[in-house]
Length: 277
Image 1 (tube, rainbow, N blue to C red):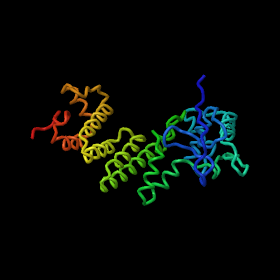
Image 2 (image 1 turned 120 degrees about the vertical axis):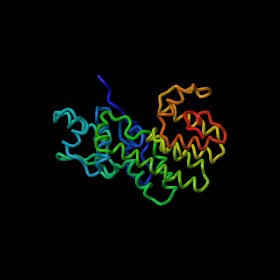
Image 3 (image 1 turned 180 degrees about the horizontal axis):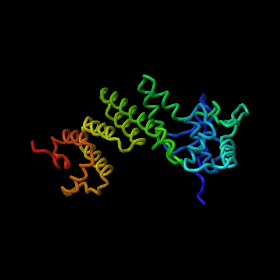
Image 4 (image 1 turned 90 degrees about the horizontal axis):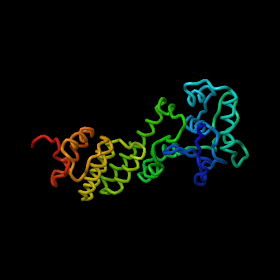
């Protein structure tokens, strides 16, 4: 029998925040919970409710967690009870997941890192944008037993795009200020959430070039080529056929940027399949 996913019991969020934080900007975690989530789908339920702050009916959350099955009422009751026990009670003695009559809603004592991200991203201060990106640890919602609802509701794509958009905004601001190192940092944080987004790789290419780092331009391009093509391209002396197939998987805008940056030093991929001058 498959074991249920467990969220580590971590320290609660910083002082002044909610007592429990549901972290979805990477592998799912519940920080400040009373105990591990040992029952199947109890963690999924808490994550679902954290992304539906107005609460959800039993029909809504059960359909999200078990889209292909109608679960028996005792199973639903046990799942909710297990989630309630794992979350525990707040400093006021009340449950972080109050009992509901056909509807569940997390108490205000439970927040999410996504809420913190949104608040910081909405600020006009680039330091707040950086703080928001620092919350990103990996692919959003990673580790859920049943992640289909995050896709069907557009949440996974929406969170990824919000992270990428903020990473690009901060990177543009830092590049304009002549700080290519911070621009590259922002791009790398964005790639944690959306590892195939070539807009972020183009930031890395420009940042390496702005730093006078041709080796960084080359290593970034080879990293991308291997990622998107799946080709085991040998960097030192790639056969032209292999390199051509690999480059065909890369967006034309990225290839054009790389060639423009590599033209003065004859980067090894710059001439592969390039039109004659």
